[in-house]
Length: 110
Length: 114
Figure (cartoon, rainbow over the protein chains, first blue to last red):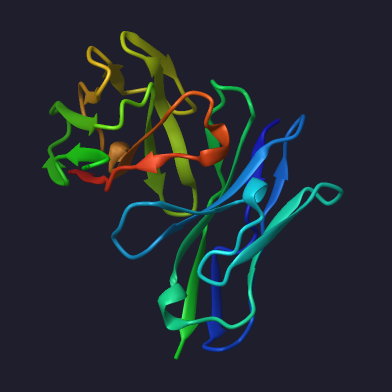
């Protein structure tokens, strides 16, 4: 079964502290993994993709195929990072839909 | 370039009323999707379309119908609204062969059914 889990509904960290948002997935094959971010009352935006191995707004995520995880990390949290974060996966064929996790609400305390 | 536009942004319905949510994209995307967003449940796929004139059911299609008469528009209909359909609805689109680029989302429609 295709599934994305995010064990933490809420995560609070102090400004300047490291942050890690956990994501685990189950998928038969090699999926594409994503992190989406939704700031208060705004549309979802693609934050980063595993395939590009990029760092966006200081966030990085490493795909661990052995542990089937795709945790999102940032060494020093900023207040503007407070948002809802969704981990998501998609298959590699054209028709594949994106499956979202339940989301983690990150609150950065000043 | 507007991207993905959803109308209306907010709506309050009485139980049993009907309404249509409109999603319009100007990026010439073939694929379009309707999701609902509920606290603690993330985004769940309602219906989707892989091209003009085609639609398919997603994870939670009951109580909804869709139509894709024009490539740029994807309509979501509620024939008889129920309080369980109170949610935020997001439309998304993408081009074929771009699964690794994710979606472009609309700004959402906040629907309350009383």
